[in-house]
Length: 321
Length: 318
Image (cartoon, rainbow over all chains, first blue to last red; front, side):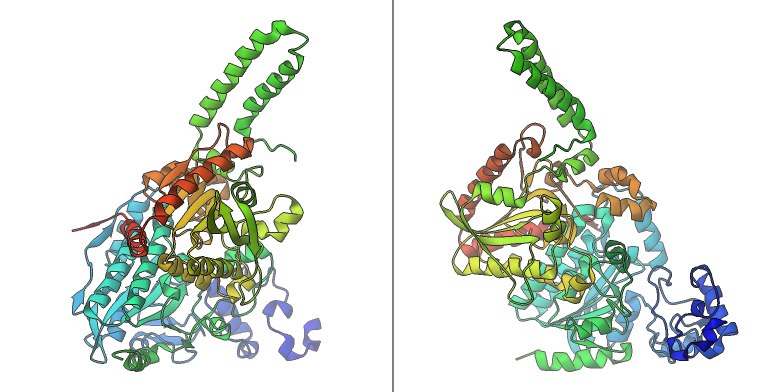
């Protein structure tokens, strides 16, 4: 055991102490956690909570009464977590939640007073393989008609337009419906002269299945933002895990104020694409909210519990001047 | 420059080689004239047949053909007195986007172009035409200059995509693209965009918002590369030809989908076989649209531009 001579702080991986082929990547995540827990409680304590891997992570809040936190591995009780807005009380891991939950968290009445374009549904302009089936499956799974909901509601008794994308619906990707809905939401905010808030979650950005038409939605949503700016409408964006690609490269980046949830993956190109291109490992915390804050790309990183109050305070200053 | 031949170009190349050989002999052997004529006719026929039935994947290969005219060739060929401007005034100068002032047949413009580079050395220098945020910010700065001095913008698109790298993300690749979209939508001067080869997703779009978007006949423009699409859908990049069919990314598809305004014809066999004709065709198209757009009042111009993008989308509402 050569490794026993190493100073403790240099040991960051189990594979440095015991010979494990290919690090621990050979084990399933479940086994890996178990391995950590049973075999090396001493070292486990030293390890930082790992960042969730977007590929393997669950798509929505976990099911069942008890489950393990994706961040720290602690056992959590469902109702306790729900009260905590799906933020782990031990490590602060923000569980991914759907658009409906953000609506409940942000709006005074937990519901839209008026929904915007609720009946927009996708067509299949390219006749893309399996697209229709994918939409139907997503509809059944999420109970939504598309990857975004929008409506007029109240926050701190202030009328606003709220637009939210849902990762559970084809990765929160933007096709014609998401683009159109965002644009109409922006127009509604202009018409009512009220602020707009967008909460984003999108794995791939523009939806591949609608090809170039999806790409053009980046322009359409940016037009919505431009028109809001010209009309003096405050526009706040809450970036949640993950917001990438064409969504990040259009309306998600164009807010007057950009708020990010902790450790959300935010950027243009996906980490895997970058790794494959530059053929080297990416730095720790790369493309996470804190990284963007450090590089001047977002205004603040906020715990989900602070979102509503902070938005109210910001609007209080920006609005009605 | 060595000739790069795509598979479907080989029969054409063979027959053209034969024509060339024969025409060299023709002075000494006038009796070959008939055969030469027949062969020339046959060559035309084959070319027409091959190029009228290209699959989407074959068009992708043409769009990426290494001998195709690049932005630099179009800029040199179309403009007089091109003055290149460098740098984004924030971080650096990105050689994968060329920007500057120029005249096209006396019309003063600012011109932007994505350049992939020709030889190995230049390809590395140009980062294979994959811009960093500073490239997009340089483009934005120069377009703003155009607006101030009432110069229309000509933007030439040819990129595999925005560069996926650490520095690019650190400096806000997504922000740079998003800001350009908003900026170009609001720019109070005519914008003519020309896709000349590859229009690689957001990396292309960031300089491709315009009043008129043109596409060369064998250019492509897509939300994702066929290889990337195949890797996601079928976990196999080798199925790219199938993905190319699904993505509907050729100039003809784009026109039918209402995403581009005009297809600019290429010489038979593709732009790489006759740079001068390709460049001249694009120049003619750009001039026509510039002249039309410059007649419009600024408010009318923006109104039309916005209306155009507002309309793009396919959905139903019950």
